[in-house]
Length: 342
Image 1 (cartoon, helix red, strand yellow):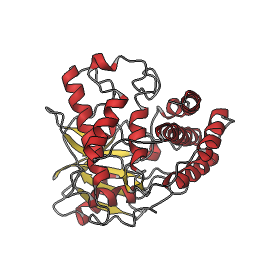
Image 2: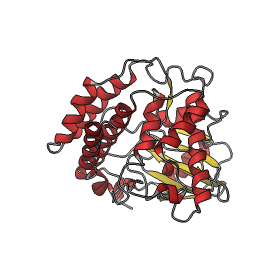
Image 3: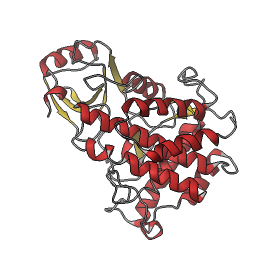
Image 4: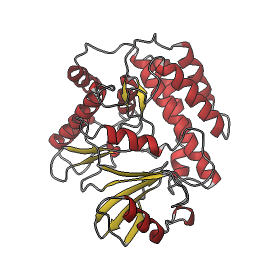
């Protein structure tokens, strides 16, 4: 474990014992290998297992690594149809471990890191993707007022604001010229759909490996990694999910492009979108190419930030450089998409 990510377990144990009901130390802390943004740790205490998620050390981009927002949204969704872990504590006192963090219950389950699900049968794969689809539809159907999240973001003009935000984030982490990103930025701004007034809780990073599944069934136990969540537009999450079907299977973050998904039992993009629409009671989705192109642009901007943090020595994973190198190829996939018009 890199020194910058080590925790003072004695200080942390005392703090958690004082601030979480029923917590008892001493503890051990082990950093999970995954995660490019907010370092995450397994906390093993006398009273049980917990998960701690923190802001990384070092200089950070404005509004990035919002662990306090993650904590808030998961706590708000505790009684909803979207499964989340039980949240225990949010600490904004940097003196405890060096940055803001929160603690939640540990969940014993499965995380599928490979979207192709190589160890599952075709029937199991179909059931897992359908479970994901159900969680996404349930999330977008939540009444934001009822769960106390009406101020979780600014409603309206979502894609216009997101384009501005991620263009700024990209510029702040730009390390070399990326022609495909410049083309995407121009095209997206020129092809913004009219604001249709749709507002939902937007997860922001909805994908298979951000979900915890039951050990024996395709049941989703928890939707994780809410750092990029906000009040937003439902089709941003849906297109982001479907983008994975188009990313090559040999990429640093492998997708399902070029794979015979029918043989695997994984739904096609058309079937996945159709099932989502059925669950939400809508007829279909206009401007789909825009939403997909935006997904490629946004992920490219995010990965450029990962790459910049790696160069600066602040990335939380050894794979950060490889992931960051995917920024340009993703932008090129987005450009190819709009040039084909599908």
